[in-house]
Length: 153
Image 1 (cartoon, one colour):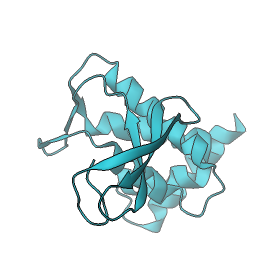
Image 2 (cartoon, rainbow, N blue to C red):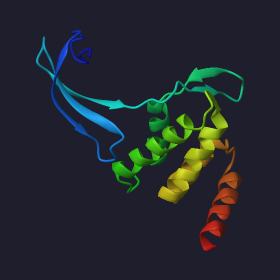
Image 3 (cartoon, rainbow, N blue to C red):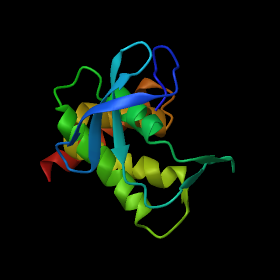
Image 4 (cartoon, rainbow, N blue to C red):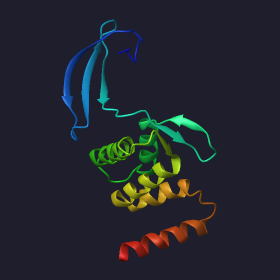
């Protein structure tokens, strides 16, 4: 594993342990050149996934990109990192076990929407504002009204 500090090719594993949800392994490493310590995570990948964008473009599925989107929606919200990790792992597992090697970006967006709806209503609305491309305040009002109605049921 390349050192993120000095770029040296080799590092030594100092400690390995499973993460809280058991879906990955956390490894503490030390660079053999500069001595810096850093953490890496190892996850099971069942298949290579390709995301089909709305414009027809294709790109490899990137869990880090999914994590950035979810983290942006959850910024400054009282949601434990463990719950966020479980949501991300759940979405990735569903995609990998679906049997499809290509998945529409809209499918991933809907999965994130459903997950955020259960985690935090504010994050759900934040994500929806970007995902559904709200253009004006009325769009927020209409969507927030549907969230309120759903909460009453």
